Image (cartoon, rainbow, N blue to C red):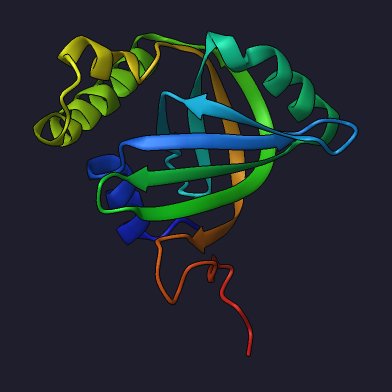
Length: 159
């Protein structure tokens, strides 16, 4: 189960995400993520992926079903990685587009004060979503730089 603190982080602060997969030859590949949401059961997440990353992503997920999603709040670099098992994918709906738009606004609001880039360029960083991928979260790792980076949070490490 995704803890409430991490759900709040995802819903209120996080503004950048990537998903990693691997192909049948175990070659890794990274895909940009336009948005995310936590399932009502707090055991699943849905990530929104732009069109330019779909071919390799869907092929990898159908082959091995494993993925790792890293979500960050820039510029604080608070970061979590969610490892899980692919459940299904579907086209995006209006609610998904709104999620991506909300992430885009959050990203631009955070970056704008420290960037000399035109606002249009900042908006373009978060591409429109083309596919929604649902996965079951099996592990969560703290990836924030510092002494705890790499610590598995869910399931807790047994000592």
